Length: 269
Image 1 (cartoon, rainbow, N blue to C red):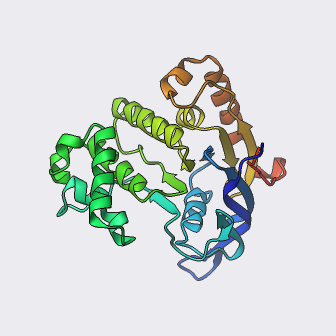
Image 2: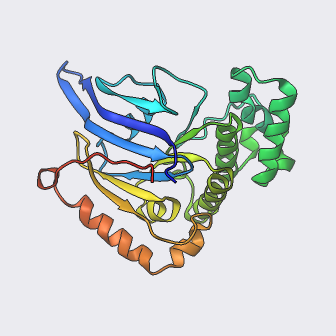
């Protein structure tokens, strides 16, 4: 049975003006769909418009042409169905860890008792329960990113947009955070669009990988990842097929956009 589409981009184009007032096209004619409980990784050269697409999906940018849809509704601005996690944790230094996790739910008007209970459930799940009353400066970088992930999940979003969320931590911490994210997304049945420059991360965390061209960004390739359950990225990493997927992605990233036709990407199967 086909799964419902949670996040969709229909023929999205985004143009900006540069410092000289000239038009710059960041992405051009991008169409893709991500199904319920699916995780899709988006890779491509720097400046190809990956983050622009996330900003459009989050309602922070209005596309020049085309539209984004979440749960079938056109994205007209920030909404409660989408949560965005960035490279930096952006925890507020004057709030405790628990208060930071509760922030989004507080903004959405959720009752204090409900958001407090949810925050502590998430912190316990990420091994941060004993640090709920601490402040961000008292946590390590990895712990801060866990708290940021807990804050992202606390609003119970339909879609998570993840912009290189682990790029600022060391390799060992990154593997732990990848495991935490994979388990959380799988067990909670969440839909996510992940930007990463780490090809192993793209393969081990996702169901599909989409390859973008250089600017103006277009979808050049869709790669379905046929590996064991993505709940355990370390087990996936041990699978010898991972190296084959990464090698294919490396080859694709070296191909110029003029040699491949852009394509619409669907994800409801």
